[in-house]
Amino acid sequence: MSLAHNGVLFLDELPEFKRTVLEVMRQPLEDRNITISRAKFSVEYPASFMLVASMNPCPCGYYNHPGKDCVCAPGVVQKYLNKISGPLLDRIDIHLEVVPVPFRKLSEMNGSEKSESVRERVIRARNIQEERFREHKGVYANAQMNSKQIRAFVQLDEESIELIKNAMDRLGLSARAYDRILKVARTIADLEAEENVQAHHLSEAIHYRSLDRENWGG
Picture 1 (cartoon, rainbow, N blue to C red):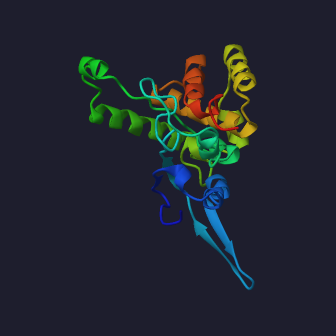
Picture 2 (cartoon, rainbow, N blue to C red; picture 1 turned 30 degrees about the horizontal axis):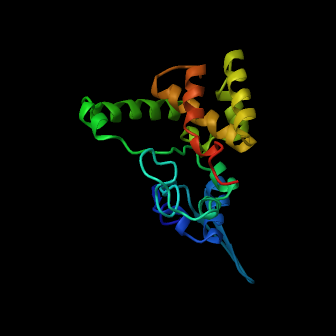
């Protein structure tokens, strides 16, 4: 994690890691540093990284597949998904289920947006965030906001408040997940160069938490 400081830590096949190892990441994801304590001393390492992880929905890979049947034995899928704890999942801002795309859809796809255009939009959004946090030492992006800063920079109107209230009730979201959604919504608004977070920004951010839904291990 410290070697990934200011970079990306990619973990492929996330549930294949030991659960005890995965649980160690919880605090560094919050504090952006790692403290290792021994009998006579303790050492603190920087660990401000972007965690990117991938996984199959089950050991055979076909759970919830639209065209193939899962062949896992009863209880295996639940055991597999439960290797990723709720507290760890809470600390991941965006998690999405990616389903197979039929060939017909692939053949119908039009040209996508050019990388240069995406890069320009991201740079503009990062410049907006740098200006926003100019007076906040050690904060350069929305992902680094604490709860007080979230309340200051994410002002919700009545429609947005009702939207996230319904989402929290329906999905059983935690307070930590609530803060993560607001951070993502603020970033989506920045990418659109919008001063205020609007309901459609919040709705998109909620959709980016697909693993909070009922099919996840419980």
